[in-house]
Length: 268
Ligand code: MG
Image (cartoon, rainbow, N blue to C red; front, side):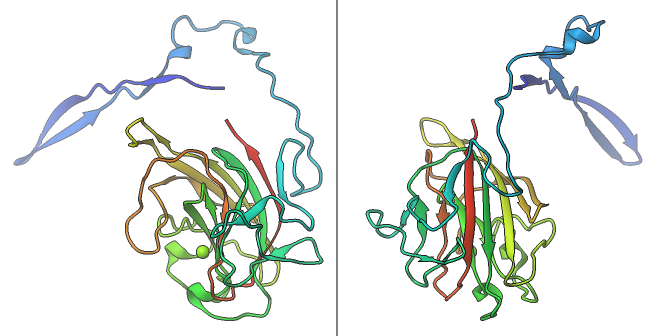
C-alpha cells in the first residue's frame, strides 16, 4: 500500500542558557500521515481492507524461481545474455555440465538482453576451490545493477582487502554489515532488492537508487542509498538513465567465478 505522508517541519526554537553559551534546540512535529487524520475508527472493520488483492505467486523449492520471475539462467543456455563489448554477439562465457556457467577470462563482461528498472534479483555464485591470487585478484566478479552500480563478488575467505571493496560491498560506497561467505568452492546466494534512481527532465537526480542485499540469507546491505556509479577511480557519477541491463563482471585476472540459477522479478 502506498502511504502518502506529509512531513511538516515546523522548526521551533527554544533557547537555554548554559553558562556563557546559548544552546539552540531544534524541534519538529515529525511525520504526519494524512490517512490517519480526522475522526479515529471505533470498530475493527473500519481498518480492514479487501482490495487490492495481491496476486498469487507459486513458489517451489528454496531458491527456485517463483512463477512470476524472468529466468535469466537455469540450465545450459546463455540465451538471455550478450557481450558488453560486442552487443551483437552472444555471451561467450563457459557453460558447465552442472547447469552453471563460468567467467571466460578476458572475454569481457556480459549483460542481459533485457533492460530493468526496479527489481528483485536472485543469483548464485561460486569462487573456485583452487585458490589463486589475493586481495582484489582472488575470484573477483560483480553484479552491476542497471549496468552501473556494482555489488562486489570476491573470494574474501582468508583474503583481506579494503572493506568497501570486500564481498557484499556496494563497491567503494557501502561496507557490508557482516561477511557471510561460505567456504571457497561452495555456492553463495545473493538476493537483491533494487530501486532505481529517478531523474528530472534536465537530468538532475531527484531520487537515489537503493539496494538491499542478503548474502546467503543474511542481511548485509540494508536499504542503502546509492550515491552514483561505483567507480574504481574517482567520485560516483550521476548521469541520467532509464532502464538498463544487468551486467556480470569479467575482472580479467582469471577469476574463474561461476554462476547458476539467476532469476529476476520486475517491481513497480
Ligand atoms: Mg568486482
